[in-house]
Length: 201
Image 1 (tube, rainbow, N blue to C red):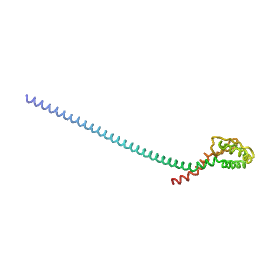
Image 2: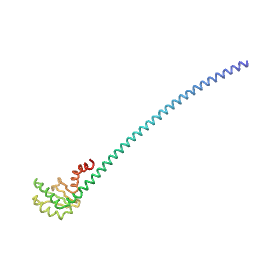
Image 3: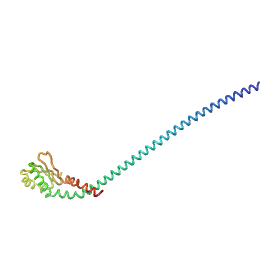
Image 4: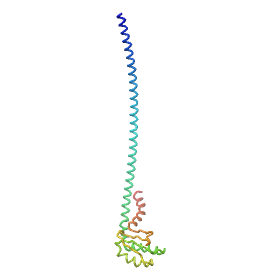
């Protein structure tokens, strides 16, 4: 009887132990599967993050290289422009200022423009001349221009003009500016293409 009881106890123990081991192995297998799934997802997400970071780094590198090329190109263009401006200004600045502050030269321009106005019958002219040349030009304007146009000419002398003149009808509908600044711009516009070609090919 004791033996049977012992056998029954051993059998129950073995069955419980086997069942517990099977359940434990099943739980462990599921835990391993879940861990493998989580690890695979984490690895996939990490790979996606690395790939995205590489793309962003490549995009940033491309953008920086593009910006550097554009900045270098603009800098080179600005430097060429500065050199061109310097040379054109040096070539013309002194000569233009000398000519436009020479009373004889300015008188010649005034006379040529006035004759053109006279030929077209528009004789009511208004002149703005440099204040620094008033002594030299005022007698010419009052005497000779009056003869050319057959009418008195209104002339004012301004400190705002260093050389040359501004001329137009008295009604102020329009005017022609032949100051040293505008003359400089005019000559420079013709010199620039040639200068650019000579300097930079």
